[in-house]
Structures are given as C-alpha cells and as structure tokens.
Length: 107
Image 1: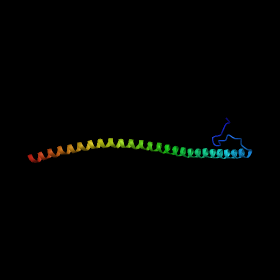
Image 2: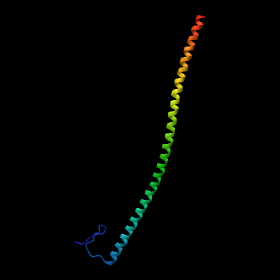
Image 3: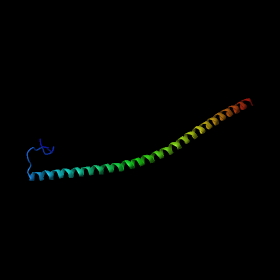
Image 4: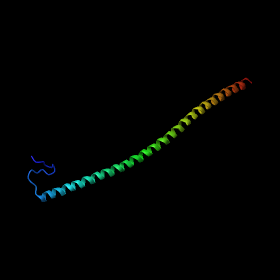
C-alpha cells in the first residue's frame, strides 16, 4: 500500500501540477505554523514580563508588610506598657482619694 499524507489522502498517481499545488499548500501550512509558533512565543514573552513585574511588586509589598508588622508589634507593646501604667495611676488616685476622704471625715 503506498504512503499517504493525512491531509491529502490519494492512492492514485499525482500529476506534476497537482504535486506543485500540494507543495504550495504544504508551504502555506508550514508558513502558518511558523507564524503561529512566533505568535505564541510573543504572547509567552509578554506574559513572562508581566510575571516578573508582579513578582517584583510582590517582593516590594512583602518588604513593606514586614516593616509595618514590626511597627505594629512595637506599637502594641507600647500600648500594653502604657495601659498598665495608666491602670496603676488610676489605682493610686483611687487609693489616695479614699485616704483623703477618710481624713476629711475624721477631722
């Protein structure tokens, strides 16, 4: 059985003009395939540029987030200390006022 090309299933002999036509058609398919591959490569490169840019943005944001997280932790620690100090002031004021009231009552 003779070899047949899937795009051109013929089992009968082909004339020279038909072969030239098939050759031109194959060349057109080849050109289209090469163009399609080039288009895919261009799209891939554009996508790769976008990925690199977004990875750069991500790294920058992660650094900023780390700095802000440290600042937040320091603020929280400061708030805890200051709140404890304020509570101590409240307790001292209450005790002092109570002692003062007792002095006023006994005099």
